[in-house]
Image 1 (tube, rainbow, N blue to C red):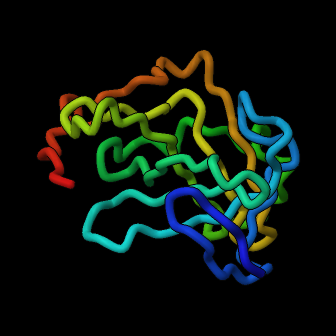
Image 2 (spheres, helix red, strand yellow; image 1 turned 30 degrees about the vertical axis):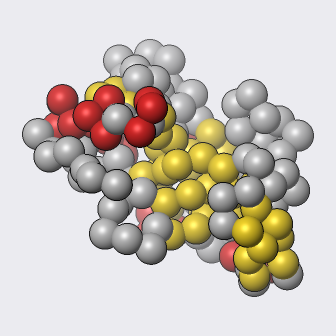
Length: 150
């Protein structure tokens, strides 16, 4: 199927690559279908593009490169409704904020990760209010990673 996007123009996406968020993403409950687009550069970022809204795309990243112990904070009961049977089906991503193209200021929302079942193609944003994580975790200042140039 073809989808129209603001950032990437018209792209071809296989239907079996769509990810359904039955409850949407916080602040965007009406948008339920997304596709994960990989970055074509060496940067560790990807895009979660809404299928039905060409203007909506989130910059996302696996949190493990800057927070290696992160996965242990998500409890099984919080993701039971996306039918995870095996941990190998699990993909955890966090939404990034890049202020004014300032790579040193990039923050990650560790308090609201996106959990995706790669087998069923269902996703859910989990809120971890008592985790001690913030929604503005500075990925370079805290992790020791070097800055990125883009």
